[in-house]
Length: 122
Image 1 (spheres, rainbow, N blue to C red):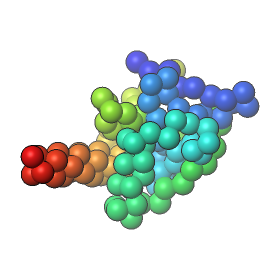
Image 2 (image 1 turned 180 degrees about the horizontal axis):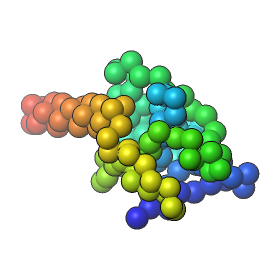
Image 3 (image 1 turned 90 degrees about the horizontal axis):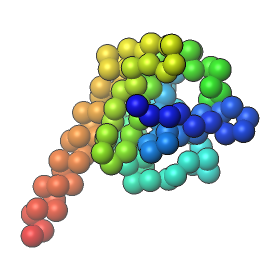
Image 4 (image 1 turned 180 degrees about the vertical axis):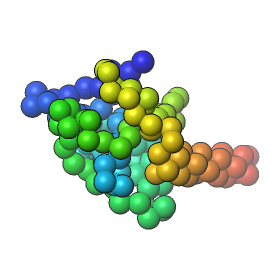
């Protein structure tokens, strides 16, 4: 379980221990960097999206608009890219979303590449 945090105006910011990415109109959305912890994993996912030529924007999404999303996922060092199945009573098919699946695959490949690069330096 993960808590979705919102600011005082009701806009989604991040998870209690993760960043949140959302899919809407076939576009990847994440909260503006000034509203979240600008971690390495978050930046790596943004880079993966750009490398996959996916539309990605930093923009505010109000929690009341969450039902309009096609899918969501959290990211972090441990969960990497983890699709969100439900928020409260709302169900999502995030684990079947093609954009999320391609981001998961791209992120895993980027991590493998980094590990291989690190090992070759030893």
